[in-house]
Length: 373
Image 1 (cartoon, rainbow, N blue to C red):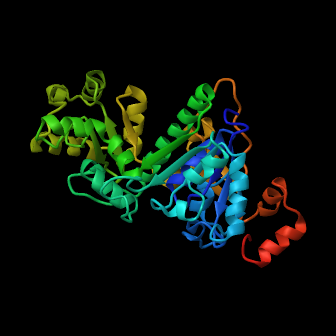
Image 2: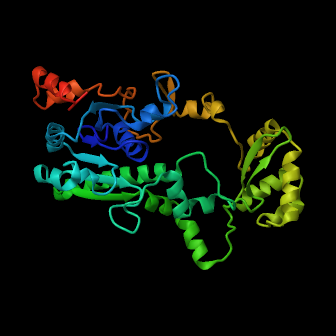
Image 3: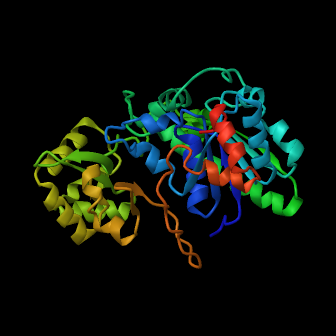
């Protein structure tokens, strides 16, 4: 695997940091999840069966050590781990990790080649650095919610968090590449709100030269929209290129609409809604399969697990009875790793401590003193 031999210490919780380290773990990195004695709060989200699907989806292929960084012995253990680590990921508010004695400045003193990535809502510097926030707040402040719809709504997925996790993984990979050339470590400052803004760069550019909030991609044009079908289901229409629009119009016997591809008038939109209402979802799928004009069904999550496309791409992973999305990357010369389930809290504490020189008596004493779990 690409990151085989790369050791990652992940101090983060919830979504952005753990998703970032998940990408690294899926590509072979040895990720040690350093949790507090109470564990990542994500373990308790939607935990009706005793196994949080959220936590499990974000933390496969990792090991867990439960460590109290508020104790001097806990900090000593972290530094021993950091001495041989390649990457540290953290998601505390600015200044917090330094106050715990586990910040970049402390880590680089014992390991100058360390790559240290901080993922926070508003970054290490700037007007909002000390504010609290969550994905919805970042999406709101960055303009993502304005782009999604004319009337803002909760998107249902964490766009800002997930986007920033990808950006952080990319930045860490870039820093590892740079270190190969220079031999030097790096500090990386990732603000989730900045990451969210980067996702709407095209919209930002367009608005800078136009007062019109309606774009080709905003759902205001007949060729790029979501329509309700005769049986009250939905299809997505993405016929932006002229050739696809022409295929749609000709297959529907509606050549009168050829010149209306980007006509978002009330009349044309009403006519398009009427056309899609005239057929069932099954009929629209059949029509698209025959003519290929970029029209696909809006599927429910429950339908995806039996979808032949995702099965053919081997994108669905089932671990410990929980179905997850697998690594969405395939390399011609590399096999994907054999996935392991998300770790139980402190499952690998004993193994990890022994690997850095602690014996059974010392570990038992630290457990009794609330240093480790």
